[in-house]
Length: 93
Image (cartoon, rainbow, N blue to C red):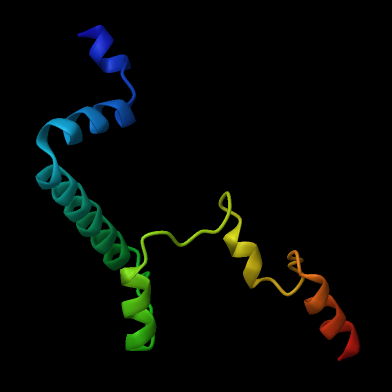
């Protein structure tokens, strides 16, 4: 039993998914959705947005483009890599 407690959760999830298959994947997704909904309601983290934008976000499975620094893109001082064409257009403006 001590060895089982030391196994990483990722390994256990992979093994269960390979044995059970899609029903396990669906169950996990439902559990995550339910937990996130409860947390949003409990901590009053709900926002109002355009239905089209909301649907696009729901359809997206990957929201980050890097190692967790996407929030920096909302800052005015955020510096992203631009192409030479973009930099020339920026300088010309």
